[in-house]
Length: 210
Figure 1: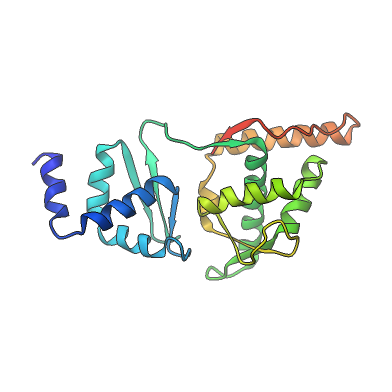
Figure 2: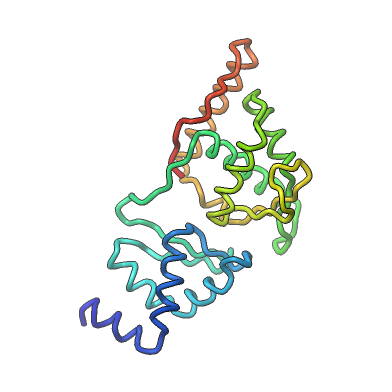
């Protein structure tokens, strides 16, 4: 049986429109989470029709990665392409948020949500880089991470210091180890330069892969 015939059979009892909507959501939004209200319905639909999604995305060169323990569905490009380009600022904030998540999870139960505040992220960025992060830059970066279901704001204004930020388990999957080490080393070098009197580099326009 060829792949086209298999897809046709799998689609016989599934709404093509519903499949199209959810397949595009999976392709464009990085992580589909059981925990997120924006992706919860998609999560259960993909889980129910996982054979169909696996067959479809296999034709496109993607592996559908199902992690039911963490409640996360994502795609892995088998050719190593299709990754998102992030500014250096976005990458450093993502690293900070990942560290906050890991630290908080150590003291919380498995079912507890990890919630921090915008001010905590701001303070850690300043401690790491010596740079005062502008409110609009913080808001833009957090908005990007929200779009890809890594965080969610529980209050309206993400630039407000007291805004609560929920961090999802997907943050642990957003970097591969090599990229994580690279961003950490670059951030540490910048901090050491600042501490030794070399001044802080205000540029945040360089790109990193997610």
